[in-house]
Length: 204
Length: 315
Image (cartoon, each protein chain N blue to C red):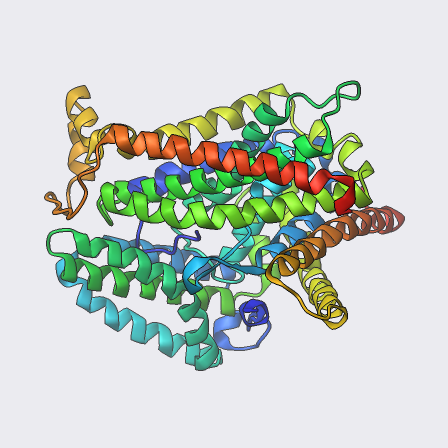
């Protein structure tokens, strides 16, 4: 399962990059991505400089390069898969290389943003950007309980695997979905408990 | 299906973002009234549930693996506007905290997975299962079959709109990107359908009360918000499926020419004009027939799955 790998984030580290205001980081990431999207195919080679610069910022942010590369690699199947489709057009190879390079750089930029922006800052930016209050609450709670639920699902899968003598294909599907179903039922009960706890602490 | 940055052209990204904002605003139209209610922790935890369920991979043919999107399942379990809410939170968090999917493409990802998947899924579910009322409650088999079929349709439609966005951005020719995306997601959608069916069957067996109680959706958003959600969904479908709705290559371009949208036309055809598409000779009619046959086949399979899973001996 690729799960654990995907959830490891370095947003909690402390570095000059992490301390920079989240609004500026978000805006500059957005503008950078926009600028890269507008680079014409013929000049796409220059984007390499941006990619190198991003790697430099990752170093300054103490994000381990291996983790950075691994997370960028997770997005590569989609990037390359779609880029390959562009081979079927005129000037295919140039377009393929340009798209692959441009979107890899964009993925790196977004990954860097994710790795260096503490989640509370992200929430504050969303609140200031006038996101609906309920949505911001939902995102906050989602983040708060995400790791608990993922852990619980892992435990259930391990327990299931430990008790199943031999899992045939269909059996694996059934096990998978019963884990998901039980997780849903538990999350409904958990939500009730959380609501009671929130009310008890004066949330209204 | 998370589109990274670098694929979508700016006009497409802006159009997607506008549609997503409208849909999310509609889903949250009565959000002030909800603050302080149990709907908020419920949606937060459900969003976390969807996130963790999305992390479980299942094998698809050919060594690749897919994962659940879960929008249609969430819409059936929670109701459409709560599902849009939860799915949107998931997609936003995946982008901003885990870097999954692009920043500029966030609008498109929210539209495909956060809005269209649950709304299309819910529409299909309602159409197949009939109205669920306290007096007319459909049987378990019918519900399971409906959720399976709805999940499959929602996944294929979301993939098709994703392909439409890519095609309109001139990343790849419509006649190439559309069959590629749809073919993969016809298979992934089958996995989604089987898991959704099994999940619903398990819930019906163990905690049927969770599905029959008044859903948080009914307290969320009035008739107005569902009208807006439906409108946004159909607009998105019309906009991004149009490159394929007319004859394969460049239907939209022709429409733009005829209507006289010269700037739009120039915008869309700017980077590259001539496609050389090898091996695409299938006529529109043949493709439509194949699609209809495939859909009927999946519908039949869903019904069989529903009957089989609902049979008492399976429990």
